[in-house]
Length: 287
Image (cartoon, rainbow, N blue to C red):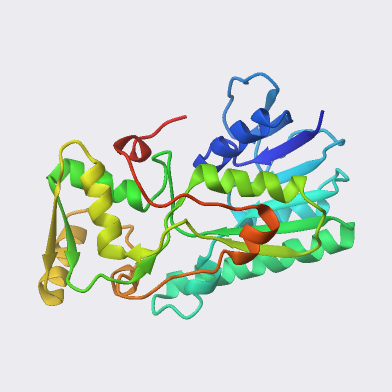
């Protein structure tokens, strides 16, 4: 029986990944900051990167489904000898490198440096490293994008967008990401590979939000406002403690196309992401 070590196993990608690994017959060791009860063939180990517990040395694959920068800092001195590492990053490493918001540029730089550090360490260890870059993730209600939109719309009965929010998006379901991650470890070992993992449908930002709202039982309204009025409303919401976490460049990007090519993943990982057909349950915390 193959053994996997999973970081970020309690997150939305990690939850779907562990379920997929178990279904494929793997034994899973998962690191968690808080005590957790185990499923059959899942052994939860309490700790974090600052105080890593004793980990099994005989591991067939290491998966990182949490913060890539923390994992990449830990991995070079990891005590185990493992032939395969699969790590999730983000397409933000590409899309936000030239962002107007300094915080978003800093995020892209952190991801870029983390990827480079991981590649270098894997090469030094003779390990096959695969980097997976999802787009907008959804499916278990734990993301900070579509699930946040759904939560705000439930509370208010509506959701407001600026006019012209037609930039293209490719939302991706966590279960499709889990499939790709498992395929990356099960397939032929490849050194220093990375894959964009967009969803199976490309659609305008406005249409993406409209489908989220239509999936909710209360059917919140989509309201579109001229840009000056929207900016005024947004400033008021932030002053009132709402949407403070919304990045400064997020509104401008609603008009930008963020589209990524999944042909390599389809060809080499049998990646077949689903179209964006959301249900209300996908925006409620589960697992």
